[in-house]
Amino acid sequence: MKNEIKVFKTIDTDLKKVWDYYTSPEHIINWNFADPSWHCPKASNDMKVGGKYKARMEAKDGSYGFDFEAIYTKVIDGEEFTYEFGGRMANVKFNKVNNQTEILVVFQPEDENSVEMQKGGWQAILNNFKEYTENN
Image 1 (cartoon, rainbow, N blue to C red):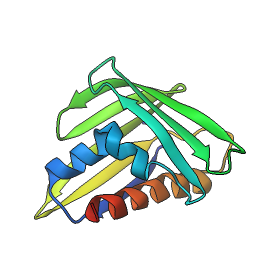
Image 2: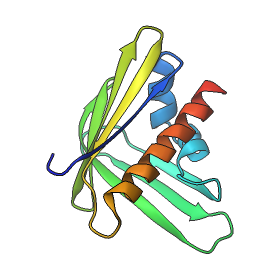
Image 3: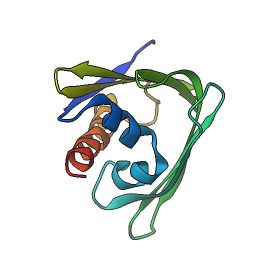
Image 4: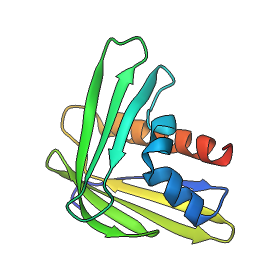
């Protein structure tokens, strides 16, 4: 991918749990936000090529929100997936490392916000995912 941004996190649990928590809507709503003042009140996920991923992200005070939607272009169950969103692509890989799982997210940036801001936001979401997954 051209001009890609990479973020990653090592999760202290097995690959199956990490995959399930990352892809199941009942878990996605508990970690899919970059800042504690935000939340993800609803999500849906049709994990197949051509399937749609949707997540609603909102400020908890109701002042702002948006819908994130993506279409899967590649899905290898338990290993990786690629999706297209707003003319951009993202790839998420899950790697077993001893008794831990590393998640590597590579995505194409948009033009409205700085690369640093985008990288920081996606990394914050992964940080939330790690905390939620390891503590539930």
